[in-house]
Length: 258
Image (tube, rainbow, N blue to C red; front, side, top):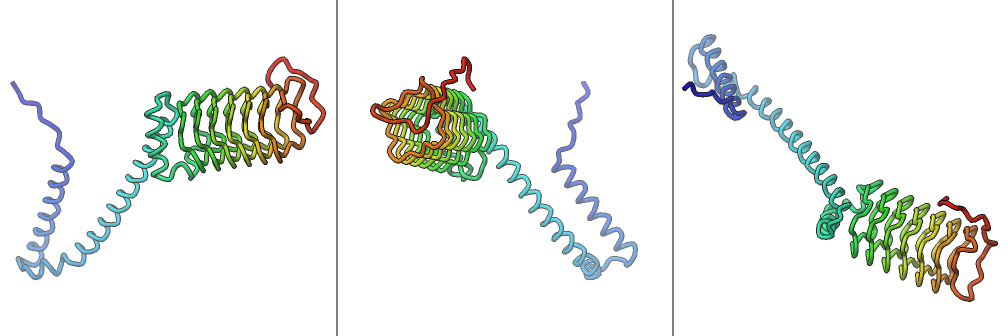
């Protein structure tokens, strides 16, 4: 039975080309000048030096490009893992992203993390504008000082989460569950909190200017020094006892979400 010839490996091809090149150099030198060892060195040293320098530059560039590609692949992999429903996988992803500094450089901008299991996750100071956390579990998560402007937390669970000083400008928190959340000094300007559960929430000195609080439950919420300029609310909004809402209610009760 005839043996199937295997294709040459890259190393074998490279070695053959190198041997051929050396053979051509030696043959050319002998043909022109005869065999003189010192003459051969004189012919080669300048060319070999420049070729080695060129090879070094190419190798360094290729290495840098390979490292960058590897980092990009790892970055995408960790973002995918962060959106997992496996809490162990998401915890590892958070740790790796933090070590690499990718929690803070915009890697999570617009990330699709719907339904992620991020209970207890440490995302303080994370930069994640326009990220999608719809339906995610962020119970006890730490998002203090996080930048999440325009993020989508619709129907997410943020019970007892730390949102202190977080930037949630224009964020969507429609029907989000935020009981006992710490949102002191948080920026919730123009945020959509329609139907959100803010029972026992700490909103001390939070900026809720222009926020939509229609049908929101703010029972026992702490609103000391909160900024409530131009907030929207309606008769379905539940305010803390003895609290006087800052503006007239919006009596237009929609049958669907705005």
